[in-house]
Amino acid sequence: MLDITGLRAGYGAHEVLKGLSMRVGKGQVVALLGGNGAGKTTTLSAIMGLIPSQGGEIAFESNSIQGQPAHRVFRHGLSLVPQWRELFTDMSVQEHLELGAIACASRGDLDARVASALDYFPELRAHLGRRAGTLSGGQQQMVAIARALTARPKLLMLDEPSMGLAPLVVRELGRTIKRLNEAGTSVLLVEQNMHLALGVASYVYVIRAGKIITHGPTGDFHDEKELFHSYIG
Ligand SMILES: Nc1ncnc2c1ncn2[C@@H]1O[C@H](COP(=O)(O)OP(=O)(O)OP(=O)(O)O)[C@@H](O)[C@H]1O
Image (cartoon, rainbow, N blue to C red; front, side, top):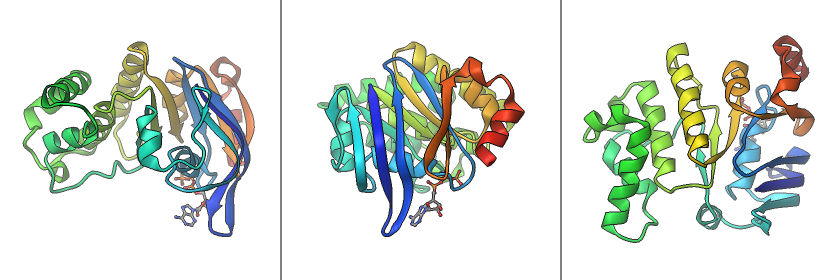
């Protein structure tokens, strides 16, 4: 579904990704693990067209999406839940969800999309009129994911969704990712939380200093200590 080959990208003269290659198959949950500053967010930003890439190739469903602006990448069926959620503190939950479905055809379609996103997070139904800034961290993460779901993405990309969440909430997040995947959404999960990543992903990539240093089926990474040391270096 998503094929990245030899990707080079960064910020001005600072090259962060130095020939990164990875793929996400249709129906898979793939985890991208790595330490601070390894290039995980940069990878997602380059895929999404939020930063330009300086080399390599990014293809989605066999079509090149390289060099396309984010709004066009989005229309191919990719959605990103950014690190720190990036909600608008003064906007209501309902307004966030409608924003995610902004590209849809009609009011009826929009309502249906919001309703099906809420099926994953029924707790939010009681808070639709509340300002996002007044919600708990876990509820804010639900809004961020639900907003991405209203676009009905084929590939959902999550950037460290467990960050700042209590262990119980992280466990619930893992269950939600599994349910989403069972319903047909492919997932690229960027994480530092190995338990969450290994619990939901079927395939793992490890990034260090802008390059994939190891990858394989999740079952190959049963020794978490070794895996941790591989990405910390
Ligand atoms: N907007 C930016 N401008 C310049 N350099 C940046 C920018 N964003 C990130 N970087 C640099 O790019 C490198 C990779 O950062 P990136 O955010 O991709 O890492 P990461 O793996 O997501 O780390 P973390 O888990 O800490 O978020 C780091 O050296 C970082 O300082």
